[in-house]
Image (cartoon, rainbow, N blue to C red; front, top):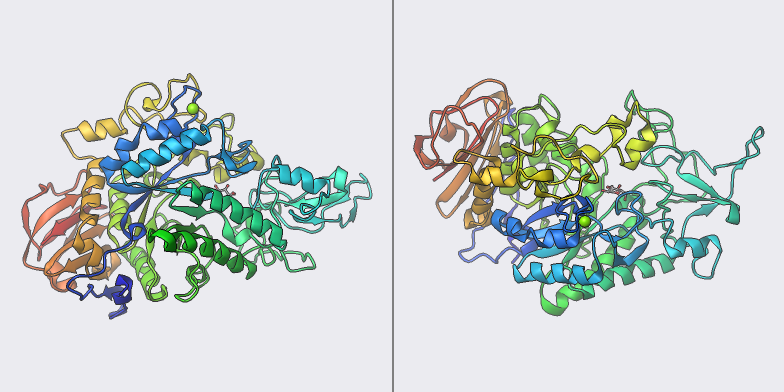
Length: 592
Ligand code: GLC
Ligand code: MG
């Protein structure tokens, strides 16, 4: 019987503090979790992981030379952002050949080498797949411009809505705006029509109204499955459908941010281009294909989808149903979207409790705090990097998948990138005055391995993005070799705790004590357990744990603390649980 079946909600809101309780798995020999439910998923941004050939851009051979790092962290699955052939207008999210490797990254041969080296270490490989659009340099696009058979409506083509009376230029079909700013339509003289691009003009949207498109994309997915990949992170799925006809005008969003301009995506509601029902039909086809491979050898091929929709109810539709599953999970962006500067324990509890309360029965949660599209967590709230340990603990130890964006294990921060060095399309399209509001370059700078030139990332004189200047202190080697505490040491403790039956099958109780200043959750299994406690406010707090949480003994052992924990508390020391002091913005994990 599926383990998750037992994660049924028992108790909910108690008084005004939030609380949630999920029971432990009651079976003496519970069915083991699937690989994708328990392995930490580590996101590699390939341009920034490790450069092996000195061109300043990371590559596949580079990733392969750093496999010890994954093993050392206890990472069991690697998700690599797109490595397909690409003109790199959106750094790989613009694909010109869905079944080949970008030469900057290597060859199909280097891909196969990396893939088998990962297999030897029992690390799963997850490809980033981008079905919504191709590059404008994909041969399909040219054939579509020329109206060649099959390809004629592979993309979304529309006639101009008129001509500009003063310039004589054709006018776009409607007011649709690209996610990266500016019109979502670009005119092609040769076809005398506009094509739709929800991202850059170099990323024309594929037309999923055409069944041939789905077929072609399924063939690409099959190509990688046959090469032995374990699954896909599927990009930007709510954008897949761009109908219904006629091509209506999108209304202005009454809740748009005050800074939004009419040329910004955030200015409008995207009623006709976002999260339309057809999306689920296409994804269900992807899932069916994956399941054929899963059934053949019993090893799950997985699908994780990126769907930035406004509510959990909408997001959870991406799980599908037990009878007709779609994604293994949709990424959970709640810690990014709903936890803002000045947050406290109640905000964290809201996010955690709402997820478990609303998640459909039999489905599996997931947690993350960053990716290549969002500010790094170490910079998001304050210069206080103790927050890194707290969020790594939430991500790794709550029930569900854990997704780590490269560098989070060492607390890498956003880099300050000048306008001259800015390369990210939404940053460039916003212009020198507004680029910092949109550019994703700051969270994409190369990984810090050591204090050598370019942090050991590359021997080049210029790396594709500048290095963050703090790498001499903030790097993997320094944090491993220090005799003191470090983020990476904490991360490894968390990862070891995740690999226990208490994490796998334990109950979960979460509370936001002290009027929501604190947050904590306990996990207990067969009389053993741990509790994670977080003080998210600016004051020292004392907590009587057994008064707030059930089944907590009087004494416990300190398992891990955030870096620089106050008051000074030794790992392995025994503490009383009825009078535990936690310094401002610190966190601690006790074992019993
Ligand atoms: C997704 C990716 C983002 C990319 C966009 C277009 O949101 O995460 O990086 O720019 O899709 O493919
Ligand atoms: Mg290189």
